[in-house]
Length: 236
Image 1 (cartoon, rainbow, N blue to C red):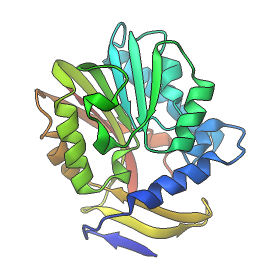
Image 2 (image 1 turned 180 degrees about the vertical axis):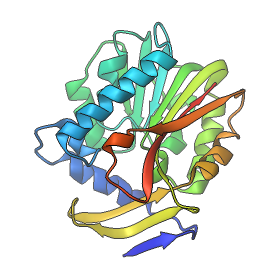
Image 3 (image 1 turned 45 degrees about the vertical axis):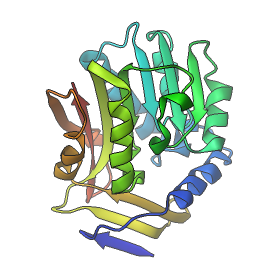
Image 4 (image 1 turned 60 degrees about the horizontal axis):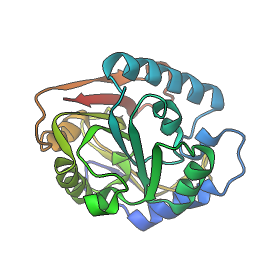
């Protein structure tokens, strides 16, 4: 069990996958609590705030959307009647099963894939995609895996593509890594890497065709943590 400040150390991707597979087996009243770990009231307020934000910032109408790390697929419920086609990928088989069961829209497709397997041959719809959507995912990826994901994204976007990212970030001067750290709230070991805004921007600058990056804090009223905060990035 470790709480690491500053040190760059990998977390085990199989352990992370198993964590979410087990979460997906829980009998919960609100599906969002499977992948988001706050009270239902907070979760609903956060979702409403984020929907308001992206609705003002991004035009989803008639667009082809790829969501990386779709989890239980809840964003498909928002996208399906706006976009032309939506693809959600996640490496948790159990989460994808939930997505297919609850969000089975005719223009939405779900695949069991990791962020490093984003080759066009693995996807049900050919690129390029107009919008890439990534929320609460990068913190579960090691540095090398982020670089691989970005290489894949570069092959799936065009010069007018928009990438929306929302992450839990470190508000410290350095990253914070929880490695096999026991969480009393989750009653399980937890593995995650909270990177600083600066670290994340260094990754995002490797994405091709990006001319501007807008970033700001989000969910500030619904954050109970001292060392981390929610932040969004819009890459155009």
